[in-house]
Length: 173
Image 1 (cartoon, rainbow, N blue to C red):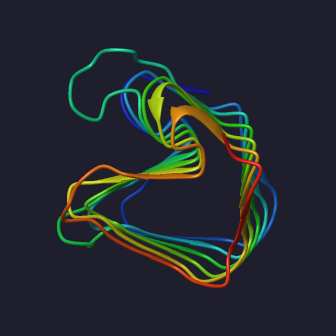
Image 2 (tube, helix red, strand yellow):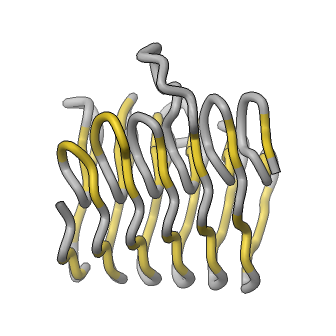
Image 3 (cartoon, rainbow, N blue to C red):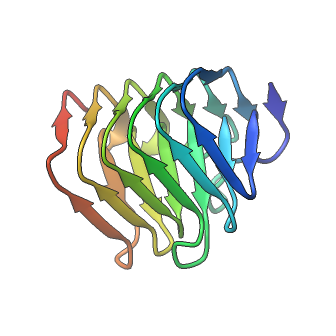
């Protein structure tokens, strides 16, 4: 499925709960190859797989080509993704955040896997943050992600808050 601007497969503007299944093969020319969570949205991932998605635009303008698997956009943490299980894998962004790009939203991960994602031109193969993002990873694993800089996680802004606790981070480059 191809989206011209945001979220090739799914745009979340309310609440979406994912318990299983697969969301894959999404292409967004701008941001959020598969899932775009807007400032009023909440995405709860309890299980399932988000895979083989692409944010394709290589322009260097702000936040374009970011978030191959998902893009979280919010003011002061208003867009929220809670990941307690499942897998985000095999996604690609042209610029930042091959797995997940968090811009001003909140990403909470207490379980599941972010693995084998790739940020082609810049940074954050697994997770990339910017714009007052809040990221709390207290479980699960971040493995096998690649980018030119920061294979696992890249924190772009000094105002971003990132907590890593009891998470396995291995094999990223």
